[in-house]
Length: 264
Ligand SMILES: [Zn+2]
Image (cartoon, rainbow, N blue to C red):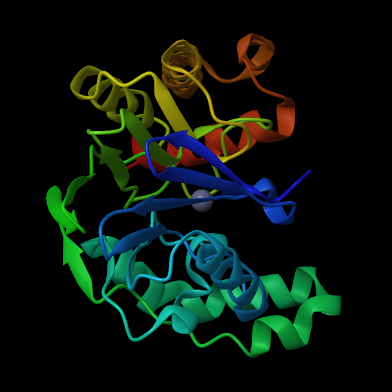
């Protein structure tokens, strides 16, 4: 996979990385730019910064799409800069950042040093439902449409370019990731995003850039997951598991998370 920037709208770029098939967004204005997500370590962030500098020399504002390590472990290397995120993004990073590091080291001992050298830096500019940024004369909207892939997913909308960065609310190349999710809310959150934002170019947190039809189809799958999970909670899972649109391991994670919501 080539890690070149792809221009998906006027001066709006995506860089898709081999590591976690992860997308970083770049919005370039006059004398300022926005970097969406900072990758999973300082080393990966250094590589990203070099790539940003091939496009623009302007100072940046950073946005974290949500509080998962692969989207923010590189934050420290971008300072000093404003780092934006949902208010719960900052809270969850404070609360679970070290735990995420420990899990990564345990799962990837060969990257121990790389994860140990990460300075965990949460966003220092937060919002609850929406914020608008002036990025060198371009207005960029940050919106939180509700619970979904995480408690704090931020959607970045660049209206003058017709581009939406959906973070991990939309996933391409792999099933949606449910481990920290709110499966009962996710389809509603995605429907709200699609209702409000008419754009055709949607950049997922991982995988290839998609169109509106792809996101709508994924929303329908997520709605089916929520519906089947509710049924399973009443009837027991039994053969229902075969009706889910995702592989069994993914489905079981979705069900576990849905039951957590239903058992409250
Ligand atoms: Zn995530």
